[in-house]
Amino acid sequence: MHRIFASIAQMFERNPRISGALADISEDPVALAEILVLFRMVLADGIVQPSQLRAFERICNEHFGIDPADMPELHALLDSPKARACEAEAFILLRQLDTEARTTLLDGMMRIANANGTRDALDERLIRRTASLLGLDIAHANLHGPGSANQNVQEEDHLMTDEPKASLSLTDRVRGFLDQHASLNKVAHDPMLTAELLLLVRMSFADKTVAPAEADAFAAICTRLLGLNGDELTDILKYLNDFSYETTDAQAAQMLAGLGEDRKREILDHLATVARADGEVTDRERRLLEATARRFGFA
Image (cartoon, rainbow, N blue to C red; front, side, top):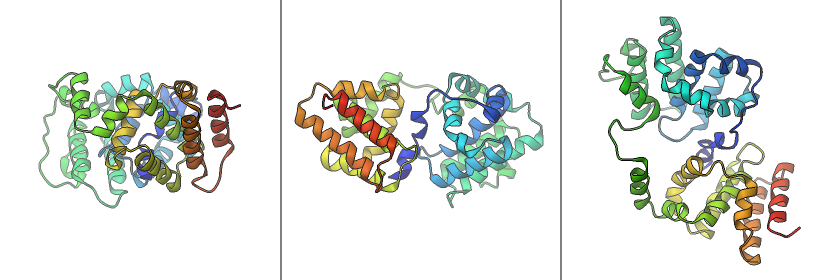
């Protein structure tokens, strides 16, 4: 459960405060493209494994001089409009690198893939296709199976965005996905439930890290008290990240302020349960709980 939260850590840092090495990288499209491709490896299977994230952070420190303490700002930079524009032409930019630099980039991807102890089919597929797009010998990736050396720009876009080349509209894809996921459908069509889940996730991340006990507490509240399917929690969190990240804590609390007093106290109790789960209530957690209580009219 803890790794589910890791996959949306960047959700809470949308406006990067850039300085030092990050400032230089933000103005270097090629370096930014390299980091985007490395981070794509972390996300290859849709779930961020802590071991792979740590490998990514080590590479960022070793090759780009990014201090581990600056990781929240880096994630915000990777989700910025500048990075999204860079991502669209990433492989055009990366072809400016010499063979040694492109090989180093591919080696970094393999370090990330191997950090989890096993390299699954999605990892191998991404490495194989990236090697081909970088113009490197596929044998260098130490993979089984042939790789195509003639990928075009359309395939590059597909690799970087995971968008089908020919597909239904976004609305149709979302509707079809929701139809197969009852709990996600419930969240998507219940603004109050969405607001409560957002506050719970924000409480989990209030101190910038999520302890396993906090993740377990969140899962227990979702499944036992809110009636959601535990197997769908990953998809629910991704939905919150994709469609609700711009909702602030204040806005989420305001949406819930019109509920009955008993229900608002129940929500506050859920928030307190998550805050206490790791045995310590930090100042940030306390401030979020107190601010939510005030917005609920209890101050």
